Image (cartoon, rainbow, N blue to C red; front, side):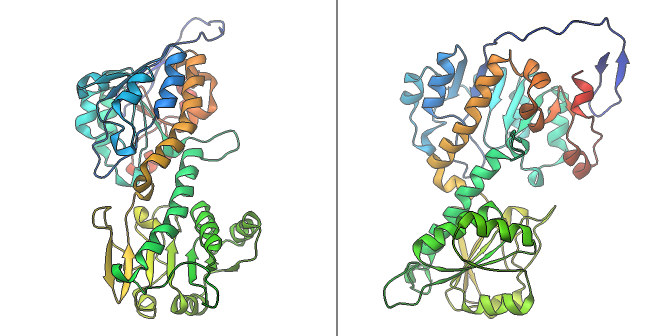
Length: 399
């Protein structure tokens, strides 16, 4: 059956002749990489090495001039790798496939050609219904990094960026502890004859695991709090070293916070991050202690948290330094770019081998897992529920 649908409308079914399945032929991809315009976004989706791997397979790539500079990749490196450098934003967005880190703005969506493919993050909590209407009007097929799930039932790009955020949170905290930054003047390290710093981590996911690894490697004393015994047990196994773990009880948490030099907030929550630390508990913390709220993009898990930026990352409240930058991996743009590129490039090469995105959607469950729009039709339940928009299961559209 053929299915046709207008933006957010009903599906009409039309009977067609049965066709035999055919083996997909290799297709050449035409990819545009525009320069990121989102505030303080410094990453780019593909490294020059990844571009070289793509162009050697016959794929064409246009990259906007300066798109890689914030990640320390020059136009010459991309040009030498086989990409075309364009000074026209419009030309880049007119490619059949648009590859971005941040989701495009409404103005950028208007530049995308109808029925094109968009691959980017979605950042669901920051979007509005108009964003999806704009995609629907252009009949765009959109795939989100946030939703891509691999064969191991893991979210590879989200996990990789969480690893960076976890490690970075400890490095950032160690800088902020410097007396010149208003910190306590303590060194986040194990120095002979000096008691180790106390690090408290809220949450037991990937961010927490890599924060704990980094803190323990520096010699800090680490305490991890989470209400999931399963996650705490898994974290202990992954660390492979003894570490204090506890469910979140007010008295135990208060005692830990009173001694803490650094507190990392890494609890997600289903919609909004739960507020685990009240303002009263912030008041019992030491002067010059540091809070890194990695959960700030979901509202934050400290009552006193506020959104900050890379250019103005901290503020002090009740004598405690607060860091609330929502896009920590962008601070380490080159590492984050290489990480994203290493994950997405094999998928793009596989899509080319399968005959392009149109064919890959039918055969590749990984690509299908990340899709939230198909030819302008919303296909992701989580998005539909969040914005009260009708959605259609992707499997009903590609039969």
